[in-house]
Length: 270
Length: 139
Image 1 (cartoon, each protein chain N blue to C red):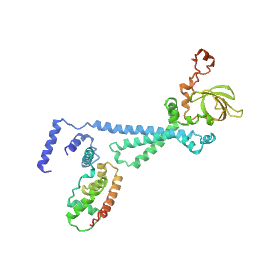
Image 2: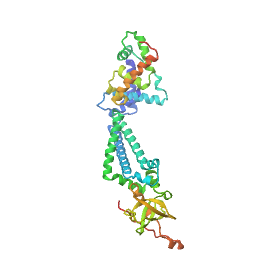
Image 3: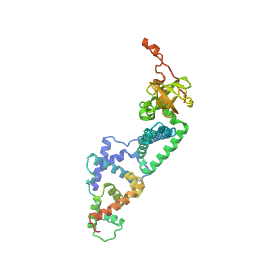
Image 4: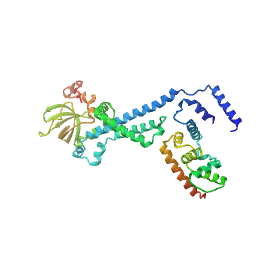
């Protein structure tokens, strides 16, 4: 550009600024945007750490041997033992953290490798702390109690352990008939009479508590127990009102058509 | 050009004093050019690289090619090779050898970590040499 062009350009520019009353954007807008990105990054990191702690929780409380004892092969065992839902959540939150940090004002200065290493390290450390504080258990119990599709998507193990035809039954103990017979309600709300052998350790058969049973179906809604396992992740699912407040023992009232005296099982204190 | 100056003016409060002012303006200009290209849906490769004789010499000097050459011949060949390189390589070569920016400034302009800038420049130099061979340009 010649000097004349430069002058014209400058004058045109100043004219436009004056005519449109333009002024520099205030500093707080830039600070707010940058802080928001950091905030979202940290929030995603915390969610990622929570997902990590849930991966730990799901893996730690899993008895992989129980799957083979229940008749499952290696592939099926891995399918249910590996907590895919939380691993996918962890990946999504880790990608979010990366995205937000990269879009902060100085985010471009950090290499992808260093950001990824920090995300992995922070997720492991924070996830470990959450695990020690029991936050993972609290999240799982809360989701178990309230989240839709919990037993299909978040923790499909519940669905796996609810297949009486294949010798797997899980549910809430609702009453003790005698030391060898207990009534149980499964995750779909069906009642079962469970039959224990005299040499079976029944310490886990506590009214109001959920259990996983390995054995075989023995007649109409009767289940012969071979092994009793505790319910770790997913125990919150059995606190759902639909299981605890379902109408039961209504045979005598059926003639009158009324069955409005639900049997309420007290929720256990986990 | 006016759009770039307007952006600079409107974003003055976003200037980071840790950066060189020239790098900051360069980055804004670069982003504006990229977004204009995208808006017009035109290919970034569609513009030519104008080289001064001294710039061509600088590039060849940096490639350790020691041969006395006629400046206009050199300029045409270097421009031709630069023009045929992918945008990401051409950009760093231009910034490094024509604009004489250091790694940190290039990093601030193209918004990539300094280490990545170094790798890009090395890769760009090697691509430049390959392209010289491919186009059978004897220097």
